[in-house]
Structure formats: structure tokens, C-alpha cells
Amino acid sequence: MYIEPKNAREIEEAILFLASNYSKTGNNSKPVVLHSINVSCYLLDKGYGKDIIIASLLHDLIEDSDTGLSDIKSRFGNKIADMVSALSFDPDINNKIERYKDMFNRTIKKGKETAIIKCADIYDNSFYIKLVDDKELKNYLVDKIKYFLDISENLIKQESVWDDLNNQYMKISKVTKN
Image 1 (cartoon, rainbow, N blue to C red):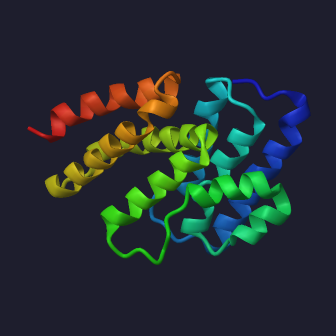
Image 2: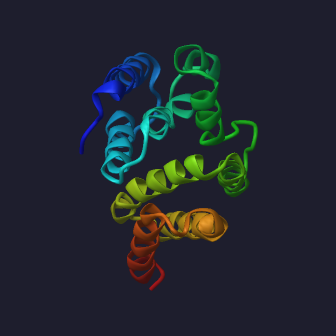
Image 3: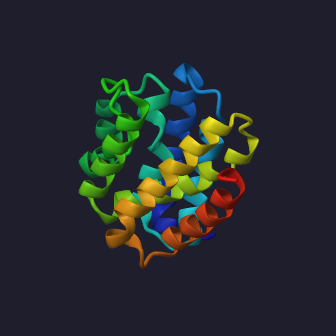
């Protein structure tokens, strides 16, 4: 993994912004900061650029803390804020299936860069599925992966992140659906 010196300051600023804001008002039991860094490092290893890396670092911040979109916009600009917004659940949708489908569809509508981030996000989260004991919850999580793969195929199937997620889905679905 290599961060170009011209991008290092902005990426570090995003890491500090993530850690600072999450440490103040974070509200998720999963390791959000570590997860976000994992996603961004994975995407760095794949050779993606600064905007994708920064948005991937911030992708859970709206959902999992009191950080607002305006905070992200004022610090990182409209493009990053728009990407993070597309990557975030709509809290007004109560049905969990409708909520993830809405977010996934907005992610695809926003474009390739945002779809790549969501793909990497789902990929990193997929490794936690084995820790879930409840069969119904496991199936729900696997179904989410399949839904994203289906709707993102035309946009990002040529990307190695899509292949990685698809291969992970194949492994997980064999174990969970039996």
C-alpha cells in the first residue's frame, strides 16, 4: 500500500476526522474506525484514488455518529459529501430490507466510484458473517450481498473489488444456505 505524498495530508486529515468524530459520538458496536480504515486500505491496495479513499474512510460516519453531512461537506467538499450521503442509510426508512435496497440503489445511481466503495464496504463486512449465530440473520446478510452484486454487475463487474465480493459471496452462501 502506498499513498502518494501529494495526497497524504488529505487522507490523514480524513483519518483524524473519522477517529475524532467517532470517538465523541460513535454509536455502533462494530469497530467502525478499524472497519473504515480496512476498507480504505483495501481500496488503496487496489490502486484507487484519493477521493475514493477519503469517502471510504468517512462512509459510516453519518450513520454511526452525530456527524452531519454539512460537517463533511465543509471539511472535504461537495464530491466527498455527496458520495458519503449516497453510502448512508436513510434513517426515515424503517424496514431494514427497504432501507438497504434504497441505499444500494442510490449508491449505484451516484456512479462507479461510489459503487466501488460500497462493494469494498460489503466485502469487509462479509468477514463478520461467520460470527453471527442466528441463521435468519446470516441469510439476511447473505441476501444483501447478493442484491448488491446483482444491481452493481453492469456498473462495476470489471473491477477486481466486484470479483472479490462475488467470490466471497460464493464461499459464504455455500456455508449459510445449507
